[in-house]
Image (cartoon, rainbow, N blue to C red):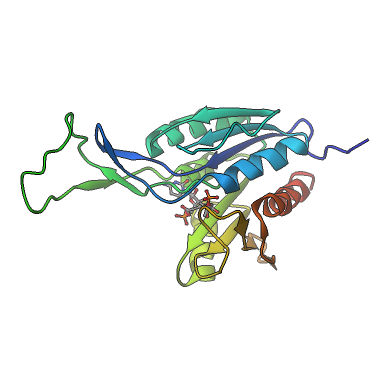
Length: 220
Ligand code: PMT
């Protein structure tokens, strides 16, 4: 029989982009497809976990048995859903590409093109992962860092600031890594100072590596 190393564990996963409304027809978004987060949800469920997957807008199918899918649009909605469920979780993995800013005012009607230039005022969104870091008791908390420069330094800063147990670094400088693709190349940086580099793999295989590391920490 197959062993289920995450049986009886509850894991919250954020995935995909967020859409920040400008007016009824437009938004600020990003290139996240949700593939990395949905692969994580599937791998965690296959290892026996009960998964809550909080997903921004994607074209992906429900990833299957053992996964409660909560669909949201905005960072604020993702923040609310994550904070509603976190206290009952054993672990959380934040793989969503959350918009750091949102339009300060959402126009009630479609904005007309009356002028040559248009200025949008933006305000900060709440940081979902940092809020879970503040809230955490004995949960294992995992974040992602998507970087374009000073990769390790920036990732270590996020590990520290958001009270993470480990952070998964992917760099847009690595061929085959990051948004939309079916592959990723990651480096995991642990709170303990240990670093593990992984070769380029499919997101399904990458998700298994991440779930393995999470399982080791949960069973410590
Ligand atoms: O969806 P795919 O197309 O498969 O692409 C996968 C991915 C590239 C989106 C994924 O692998 C990834 O790197 N996700 C994190 C992207 C990101 O926004 O990283 P960041 O460095 O800006 O944020 C750091 C961490 O804080 C992340 O865990 C993020 O989820 C979290 N965060 C950030 C801002 C915010 N307001 N709330 C958050 O929770």
